[in-house]
Image (cartoon, rainbow, N blue to C red):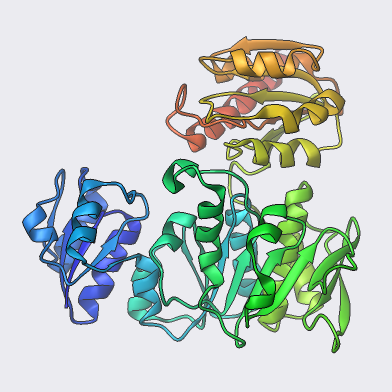
Length: 461
C-alpha cells in the first residue's frame, strides 16, 4: 500500500516510520514547517516529505492517509480526500494493527495525563514491561516498530480517537466529559461525548471499561446495558445504584472490587501516602488503581508506588514555600472545570492568580468556591473584565496585572502564613505567554526569585 501521512510531528513521523517498517511506501506532507529533529528522522529513514504545503496530486495518490490529530475535518485537504473516498485513519489505528500488546488507553476532558502517568508508574514500579505513549508526547506507532513491551499505557485525546475504527484497547478509561474543543464538533456536546466514547466501542467481553460513575455526561451518553465489555465504574462515594469497581470508603481509603456484582470480592487500598491534591486526583487514583489491579499488581505494591509518584509539571505542582505560604502551579488548568477541581481540592485560604484568553467561559460554577475559599484574586491577562464582573462581588480583594513577576509578588504580599498562592488560570495562555508550560515556568521562576531575594536580604542583615 501507499501511505500519505499528513502532519510531521510526533504522531505523524511515528506513523511514517511504522508504515515503512511494515513494507509500505510512504510520503509525508505538512502544511507548516517541520521541526529539524523530525526532518532528520525522515531523512535518515529515506522517507520523502514536503513542508509548508500539501501537493494535492501527491496526497490524493494515497491508498490510505494517516492524519495528524491537529488537522480538523473541515481542512480543505481532508475535504478533498473525503470527496475521493480515500480512507483516513489516525496513528493510533495504524499502530493497533501491528501489536498484540495489552493497551491501557485513557481519555477524558481533564485528568488524562495525570492518570496516564500514574498508571504507567504503578505498572513500571511493579516490574511490568510497559511503554508510555500517545498524547503524553511519545508516538505509539514508533514504539510498535520494535514492539518490545507487553503493555502500553496510552493517553488519548478526542482528536486522536476521531479516526480510529478497529482499534481495541485491553482496558479503556473514561475519566469525565465536560465541554471543551466544541468548535471541532459543531458545538455539539453529544458529538464530543461520542468521540470520547469511541475509546471503548470495539471492546468485547475480553476487555474492561473503567469510567466515572459520578460524571453526568458519561451517564447521559454511555448506554451501559448495550455493551458487552466488562464494566468497572468508579465513584468518590459508595453508590447503591451502581455495581462499583472502586470507590472511597473515606478520604484516604479505596475499596476495590474487580468483579462487581454477584461474585464480588472486595479489598481495601490506602491512598494516604499519595502526594496528589484535590477531588479530581482522587478520581484519577481510582482509575489508575483499577488498571493496576487488573494488571495483577498487588495491594502493597500499589500503596508503595502511590507514595513515590511525581506528577507532570504544571498540574497542581508545588513549586515553593515562603514565609509559611505554599505556591502551587496549576497552569495546565486552561478551562473552568480544571480550575474548579483545584479550588475545591485546596482547604487552606487561597490567593488565586487567574485569567488569560477566555474560551467562552462560564464562571458561575466557580463563584461559590471563590466566595468561600479565595481571599484575593489577581487577574493576569490582557482583558480581565469578565473575571472582574464574575468575582468582584464575592472576593474581598481583586487586582490586575499583565506580568507574572508582579502577580507573584502581589500574591506573596497578600498571603498570610498557612495560605496557598494558586496559579489556576481557567483560561488559555496565549495573550501573554507562548503556552501553558511557559506560563507555569514563569510562575515557578518568579517564586524562586522571591525566595532568593529573601535569602539574600537575610544574609545581608
